[in-house]
Length: 448
Image 1 (tube, helix red, strand yellow):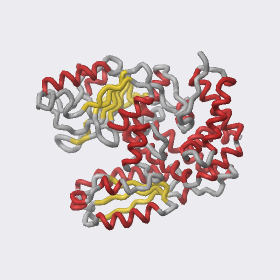
Image 2 (spheres, rainbow, N blue to C red):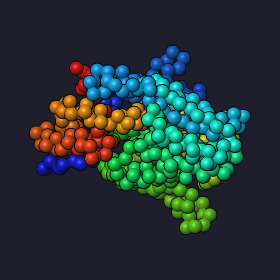
Image 3 (spheres, rainbow, N blue to C red):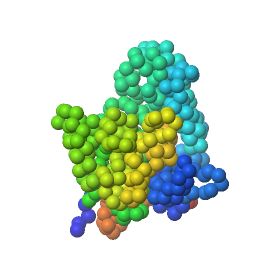
Image 4 (cartoon, one colour):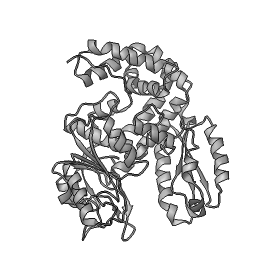
């Protein structure tokens, strides 16, 4: 078959990640006094001196630090100081408000992980009495502060602010060149359309990364030039339709050649009526077909089963399906985290994520990584200069990625690689192409 020219994004960090022999997404470990196997490892934590295979976060964050330290070895990038680039998180809520306690803990985790990557963390905290106009004024200042690589609001807000402030309008005022959490609706729209954009929503991106490693390594799927597995030939169910997880995930999967099912939601199969029997039938028919289930339902009022609060039960899933569960909600005693899948589903699954240590760390890692990329966007002329100075390495890297994906010779892919290189260095092209290219070629530069 003749070589078919590729024109989508090419590069990123995933090609490096998937090539690392020490990175293994599957893990056998104890968790809440139970032993689990086939767990997709988002964190790679070490507890009680028992070492587990390295996970997604434990590989990516130190690699970003290594690359940040290596800037001084690249003439075009030597003046970039990652430690001066800040990832800003804005927390609104009173310190004694239990509703923001989880948010405060999450912000602390993001801050610590940011520092490990070589960047600086910045947290702005405001009481629940702050007004919308005051936040607009602050946001205008942050949007124009070149030392801030990305900024995000930790939602939901607590207290009175959570009731009166229109956070959608607020997030739509975030400069899209700094919208590292994908909260601006312009970012959401561009991601869903597959258009050029600065950032993606962090949670669906982390979910795709975890699934991609499994598909490439365990199922032999081809790795696309943009670093995501091809989902061709797979039926993929998205459960949940939230604006920043379910909806963009559903739309982006179509571009990765998946046969998409869903997204499931509260009205699926109901015909507009509270017909739980019909709903359960529709839910089950779809979920039993799925080779992969991406779930982000969260705490919900479905109550479609007797005897369990989980949405998916063992009889609803296919043997050897892949489960990527982004839900973590606290029910009953408020202490134990619950996902969307009853634990009985794990025996049937080929692999799965747990409520903690899976999608959560992958999301935080993605967010920090986007802060790192935000720093490069703010120095895009230097990035393009670095690519020009290393033209042969960039074209060679692109040629290899394209040939591998197309199952073609490098001679067939070389002209395509040259076109994509020219796009990356072109000042009129979107900066994402230059940043993707630099991330792809970084390992080769660090070998010299």
